[in-house]
Length: 85
Image 1 (cartoon, rainbow, N blue to C red):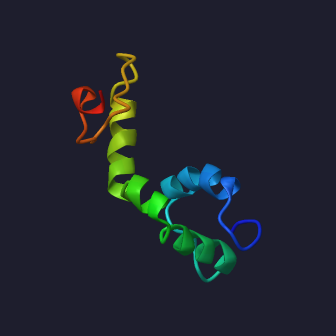
Image 2 (cartoon, one colour):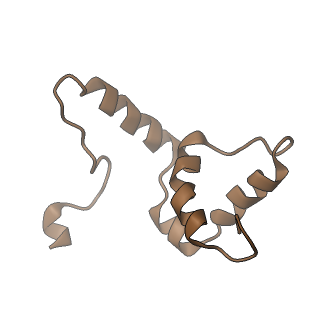
């Protein structure tokens, strides 16, 4: 989709960076906005996406915990370690 007509590794690799930036301006970046919308139709993207609010809350807890050196990378996950084993 980013390169060609089918979703590829480049799409999945750059997708997380775009989710943190939010949707592009559709008027000035039509191709990029179309790609962004098409990515959200993919089952893998739907299953692993976080909301913009979650990204903001994660960033806030990272900044507030920098002095302690602790970052909760499992932030807002409903899954515990026991559930994964």
